[in-house]
Image 1 (cartoon, rainbow over the protein chains, first blue to last red):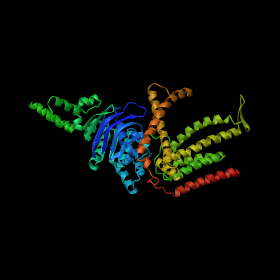
Image 2: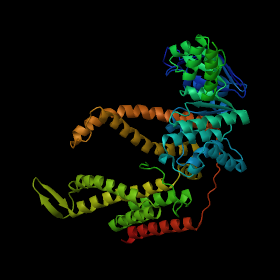
Image 3: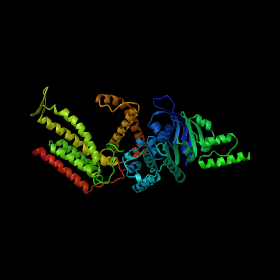
Image 4: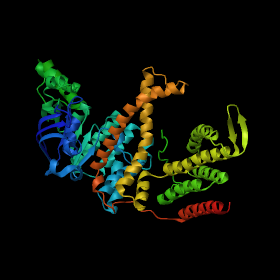
Length: 284
Length: 256
């Protein structure tokens, strides 16, 4: 679905490459989490996928990005927008209407959706984001978290093949963050939407994503299924990524020969791991 | 918390009006204020605007705007009243400074106009959704891109106000005293903040442009609008009232 080959990019006027030789393949129906410290180039990578780089932000662009068969260099953000729904990091700037329902309507109108579908799409997106009660509210009266949900709903309504979200839960409380991830997971499982999420909440990402890509100083240093990526705690910590404590614990148990199974990604799996490890220890 | 020019949701008679009617009515009132030389008519427009605000359930914010405008008006009144030298002297002060009846009349009309022109526009923007306003402007023949840019610029005004207060709060936390009563000192403290505000504003506008582009702004067609607006009796009443006001101004202009 998304193919990135040897992508390097430096913003116009800057000599430093923000992205360096990135190669990544994201299949249809994949759920990829991108992690890395600030300044690692995660947002620029997202911009390369939705065509903002190099069409909006000029610079030295090397390599090739193909999205659903379209070359991002040739297609541009308008053509890619039909396939990639993007939620940007700065939510306040992303909201362009004065009322919630108008915000969702904006994209639907732009893409000239049939009138019969529009009302259904608005209701669906509001319900999926859990904000049906906010439909007639003025955006200026919403909290940061509510605004974030509106931005996500506005993209969901477009039903893109790919959803690209840059820190979509940055201003959300843990409960709301969980709900956003559950909704994304549902879209992924039931509708086959390819999800790419840049996120700092690694624990949550590990629980929902199928694969992880770790970036450091513009380079992709690790990429693969979540359990496999978590097998390199030293590399992750050196890159400034805070790995889940259950994964650290699994690493320590492995080092002592007490556990050989998969890296746990949630509390239930961690409990099972501890049972297995303590059973082995008791037998030993 | 909503600020100046933020949309005030509601379902009142005024909220339900056709956006074009709201636009025409508010600009019509402004036009009437500029055409007339009659203080009472301009005062009437202010009263009419306050009545509108009460009907729209936003009397409190309208009165807050009126209070802020009154302070500014007082300054402008004082700046004007001493410079008109024609007419009968009504108050004479030392150093050849005096106030004439024409000066008083002109200054009063000037500040009344300022208030009367601001209030209808403020009310119109507060009770009209930005998307409706954009659609109304496109009905008037303005290309969608320009109409959208105009309404989005208006949406940014409260955002920039919020951003400025955040920058000021951050500076206050670092010990800068903005609550000084000395105007010059306050200005000296605020001026350096304009640069960070400008930079963040440019960044924000750029992000908004990207967000719009990523949601198909450039592929929008002329017939892409979903909403249909119908002119009703309310619109007829409001536009009729405007015709009467403009007729009164016209009569006053020719006979009065």
